[in-house]
Image 1 (tube, rainbow, N blue to C red):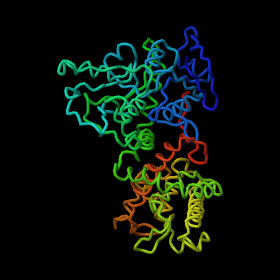
Image 2 (tube, helix red, strand yellow; image 1 turned 90 degrees about the vertical axis):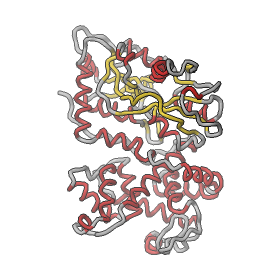
Image 3 (tube, rainbow, N blue to C red; image 1 turned 45 degrees about the vertical axis):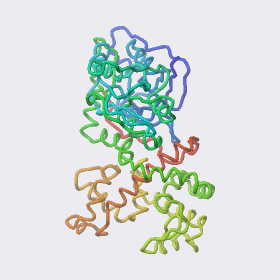
Length: 466
């Protein structure tokens, strides 16, 4: 059975796409007001986060639906192989599911333009020896997702490694297979590099042994027939978002903060979640509720500031769990910076005040990331960086562009032209990216996703198809 999800509405029955005589599929979509997209439920494609639907494929599909001026309905089959069958049979208008373009798939599907490159990687558990190549897997169990491009890759490699064998799993996604390797239930799996990037932060005993095969291109898939109206519209759409930078921004939002993975730092973070966070979690929750914040974001800020150490002290006199300066503490009414509850309450009030100062035209999640930068470097320097971004022809309302401008505040040829002058602009960039990773891990470990206070859906308005 296919799960059909219209944004905000779950539909449990799906009767396929009506075939209107002599009308191109693009016209059918516009007349019906609905774009039906097949996808997968995974961190790299589509999932439901604290603030609603999320994921790279969801973001792109939602933007495309808005571009066409129709609503988006997501169709989530029970397995990856079912998804391929459904798009072949035309029961969805297109598949946006992190699909690699392969020669075997091109015989049965029509692909749109590539929007991302990935490498297939063999993953193993650090408690076992690292294999050097596919011939070094010994008697270990290699399990891959059924229907994936990894099957084609292994078949192509088999002449070189005649003893190579593997098992296909028809029920589990790549993320779940990575979990099985982490739990030592299977020995190896193959996953795309984007999936590995996101999961290494959570499954700390996983390692990449080596890349398998050549780099692959990801693209949307369409039923293979003589109707090219929708795929042509998708080509125009991707050309537009490549030219205006939206594609780069969406990919950065999905992966940018995860690419600077620090195993040792993450290991200590996980240990501190168990040893330190329980003492302060209620304080974070209460302070966040009072200020309209997500407690996990507030806790991530606290960890970046002090590693949840209420007695932390910097050489410049900043101190306490939220590392407040004397001036900031006075502003938010904190008399004792070493009292953890007072520090957390003060940090929450101060961050909420930074959020309120962010320009109204800046949408989420960029608003939150810029408020974090302002929390670290000051609102004035953030505004200077936004001005530089605009001077460079970039978007001052997008974090990906502002974070490129911030380090320029340390260069004389740039900061001498600004209102607030010199700043160590690389520091707020690292600050924000670290907090984003801590926040992701806290949400993943918490698993509840009940709070819905930040990152409302925000999709740029694109021209409608006439």
